[in-house]
Length: 351
Ligand SMILES: Cc1cc2nc3c(=O)[nH]c(=O)nc-3n(C[C@H](O)[C@H](O)[C@H](O)COP(=O)(O)OP(=O)(O)OC[C@H]3O[C@@H](n4cnc5c(N)ncnc54)[C@H](O)[C@@H]3O)c2cc1C
Image 1 (tube, rainbow, N blue to C red):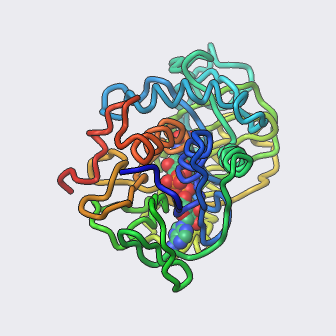
Image 2 (spheres, rainbow, N blue to C red):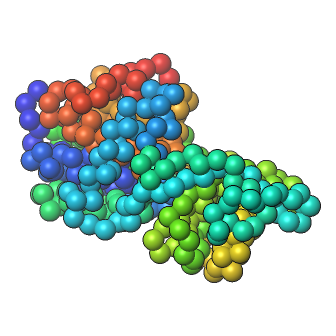
């Protein structure tokens, strides 16, 4: 196939943004279409934690390692401050003081002064890092538009070879990339099933060292949860309570679950007096896209000429966006991925 003329990317989450940025930097600007705007879903509300080697036991390992390296270079390329910084990462166990369990916080970092015990360093500033995911997505889009791409709002209802139906109108395109996260099934294409998994999160107005903490925590009512606490330069982000709520039609319809947000607040307070005193600045929820085998779906859509898919990144979409963008750009412009092996992510794999 020759170099495509009109390229349309459906979805302005981190994956659509990374694809657009990689294409634009290679002289192939696209039109990015989203029903709401930039990063209204998980790409604006996720954690932004990056780990170099935590996917090494799965076929995602090379994608994650390549992405981690690209994340190191991107702040300079994008010439933007979106909170990229290396982090130290710890594993901990703890319990709400009301359940009676007491743990001995001998070697905890000073700010972890609650009923919590750190029992391992699981990432160093060489192997773990973070970005603010919405600011990162915006920086990718800004770089893409600075290199010729454009952004428009529009709701996609179907995709065929050669056309994307947007706001009820058929839009012709030489290449179409479906990157609508858990809503990618709306394109009506023959793809492995992609589901939406909801997760709540909060931000706190607090300042703690550049640390991430992954905990097992017993709440006041005896529930075991797995809170994740990420310090950011100007706030603290906490997530780790999944929910079985069904995927609504649009990111705009995702309901905030106040009880789950309160669980996260109480868990954060149980970790640290600094967090116990901190006001909650945001309560939110979003859906990540997940597949049956846990692997993203990246590649040409089988039997549909000129259409590619990039979704299903589960808990690692912010991490794996840069190498996904690079991979899809290679598929569209060079006829196939060559920096990494795309075979494990094939849309033609058994569903
Ligand atoms: C609580 C939580 C914490 C997370 N923490 C991390 C983390 O620390 N590190 C990490 O790497 N990953 C993390 N993730 C995962 C990460 O957020 C996702 O994998 C990633 O954001 C997926 O990006 P996406 O672009 O595929 O999808 P999305 O961000 O969902 O974007 C899809 C876009 O498609 C648009 N769209 C939907 N339907 C239509 C339509 N019909 N027409 C037009 N546009 C449409 C939406 O508006 C949306 O903007 C987390 C996820 C959650 C839920």
